[in-house]
Length: 179
Image (cartoon, rainbow, N blue to C red; front, side, top):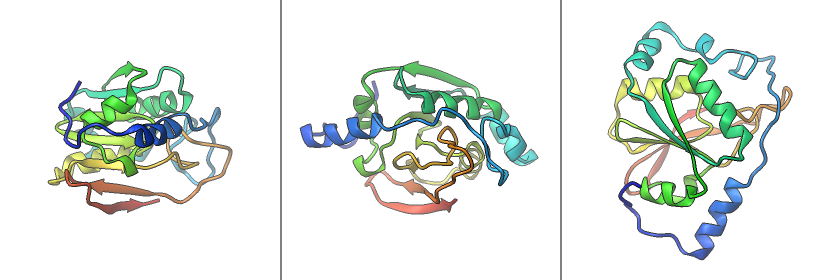
C-alpha cells in the first residue's frame, strides 16, 4: 500500500466510497460524435506529440474492483491509446484511494498511479497523456462519479457533460478540462 496523506476515513466516508464503487457499468459502447469508445480506438484520438509522451510513460499501476466491467473497459481504452498498464484487482479500493491521498469528493471507481500522479476515474487517455506531457505541480486528475459517455462508461449515443478536475495535496481542485 501507499503512504496515506489524509489519514483514514470514518464509516460514513467509507460507505460513500463503497456506494461510488458499486455504481453501474455500461456493457456496450458506441458514439456518433467521435469520442473515444470501445468502437473508436483511443489511439485515433492521440496526436503525435501525445503519442511520444505515451511511449515514454512508465507502466501505469491501475487498481480496480475485480467485478467492475466499466473499469475493464477503461483499461482497454488506455491500452488502445498505447499506455502500458499493470492492473491489480482488489477488494480494498478504499485503502488504495486513502493511501494515494485522494480526496473523498473526487473518488470514483478505479485509481491509476504513475510518475507520482494519481488518476481517478474515467479520464480519457489523451487527457492523461497531455497532463503527463505538461508535468504540472499537482497531485493528479479525477473524473468524480461515473459520467455516462466517458471512456468505459459508454451507453449508446448518450454523452453527459463532465469535468476533468486537477487537484493538489490539500484537496484544492480546478477544472482541467470540460467535456
